[in-house]
Image 1: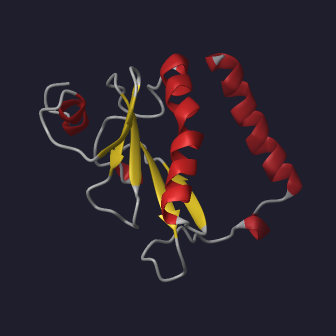
Image 2 (image 1 turned 90 degrees about the vertical axis):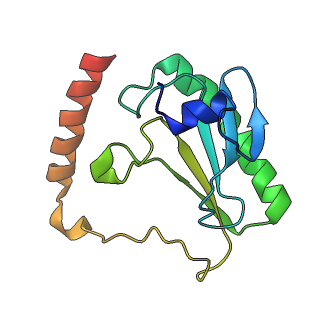
Length: 143
């Protein structure tokens, strides 16, 4: 894609602090650094989001995620790590080239949070079974 910032990084038209690269994947530091070591992992082929990500591209990308995560852990000794992927503008996707955020977590005051409300009381066992069945039906369609 001509105007995709990540495609430009892949083509080295824009700079990036690379941490890993192979023929399929590029990982580099996010310029925002939500926390120290915040890294983005992207496929080298342009695919917009999780809905367009092909199985082979996903496999190539996720194959290297544990290695990069362990390297971040070894380099900075975070207490934990969040893996986050936003899909579509409503979910805060800002660059429309699939990317996975690895965000090291250091303490409660590191500036990042994933706290969300718990709605468990609003869903019965039967409600959950019904939701699962709806998803399962669609999985059969996409498989």
